[in-house]
Length: 382
Image (cartoon, rainbow, N blue to C red):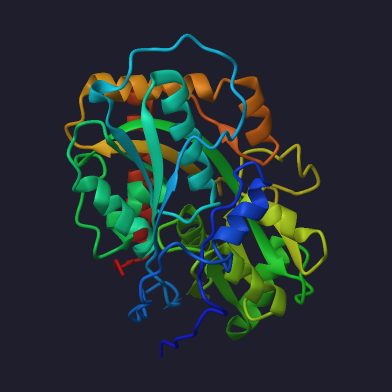
């Protein structure tokens, strides 16, 4: 039987200074962060399940905020100004996630650089809800004139595979402009559990599966697929509880209501300092220099278990190729800026510099991997 739980507290968003610590921004924006500019009435999510482990849904509120871009994330060195953006109209950078999240930080960096380097007028609009679908749909329905851009993440590539309401093809219906950054995922365990390693977790969960549940911060996120893969690789069939973000998931982990969580390293590692949550392993090919004592999932007994959250920029299908190339060149230049590299790397975010064609190939591989994984567990879109 599928049970329904409710997340603790209201889901609110507030514009936070983008120069604050990225980890605290991400966790705060995915939980209770202050008064929203506008919040629609929350609707309870439908019950759902899939064959390989149950999904327990939590309510999601639909929120839309509009905030000005160009807030000065990092000071940039002077660069020769290029021609103004065509027609001088305002560019909307739509972010399907709340202010303060990693997506939002990178969206504001994009808006800032569009203004500084291309002479454009750019604003960031936070159109949240539907696991990113509301903001994505706004871009899909926009004119392909270069004045509406999407700053989102991994979810964009796999959304149609996990959400019934996603009626688009990310490769056919969107123009990818750039991939901007990426971060490895980390598995953490509630401090109320005695297990210290992944193998101890697997043994304990097999012995008493009803004592365990795995939190996921958002349907369709990289962490969602990593959790499915963890169940599949270990032969477990643990309940997966879907939350409205990382912060409420962490809250339940600390209280012992949930036992495991896999999410981006920059969101989870800072939460491990007080012992209420412990890191078990990082889903990367090598250990992180910022957490050198944390083993990889391969070292923990799951070779090849590598997942990362990544972020990018898209535009409506048919957006002129010349504009797509200009944004790509702009973001490659931005992600090579030493000040920005240092800032993002210090938060376990790795800047990415790729051509549009390289990004297309990367996304195609991600979609293939996700499709094969979901098919192997007979996953049905929610």
